[in-house]
Image 1 (tube, helix red, strand yellow):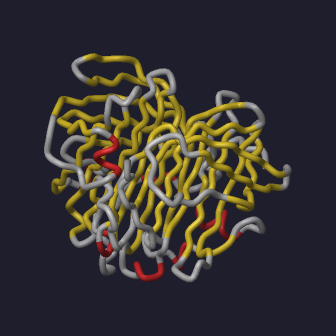
Image 2 (tube, rainbow, N blue to C red):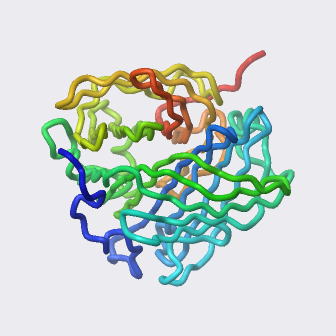
Length: 349
């Protein structure tokens, strides 16, 4: 369909954070922002969410990747947040300026700087700290991608009702502009990204979650795509959703082929292939990972531990960024994957 309204008619109230839990056991609300500036060579994965066992406590979580092997800046902190300030944590805050159209992201605090290889082979350790700051405006550049609608379409599969991490979920592509201060130097930040918003019980049925792939990108021409696939320990796909957005036309798509985590975690260089099929045709994407974040999944989804502990029994969550080529056009986009039945032995030199 041709899009004239990026909201697709969804209620603006859906963008607001809830003041109180529904009362369901481990009910949670979460937002994620993934963004990249190719000129700076900087990518970041940001997460704000309630603590599953106390709806008033919010976590802010940052993994920011620097160019030329300069390291990963990371932080994770908690605070009790008044309803009118949510979503926010001690350092990171997100503000909805206009539903479905504009958001603002700010960070003002301290972050640790760690070598990517240290995070690939173990938990994050206390170490060098520095001031990090950014003030960014996000202008939505694609329609709302609703997981329910996508799964229920003729191209989709599975159901949000079967998920262990949320029952309501949507995403949206955007352009981003603003400034970022790293190592005492302030620079313009201009790029693209994706955001999501989830609500529901988190971590209640983790025995039914085995892994996922979540990939999207927005291109200079304005076209974009997204896909999300979840599966259980038996290999059954429990959620299968995708879309393409080309010349103002928005179409749900089927996932024909998607990349899962390889046999060994890698920070960069992994080659990827993705194939989607929509009513417009078949869409082929060739990718190469440029940055990877590494997280160890804690028991019962009590957050993500920064760094990949070797041989972790509950697996790994890897929010990465890849350069995706689509019909000759390139864009860097979120390439997030996880596996619970996965081991990560260190590389033997």
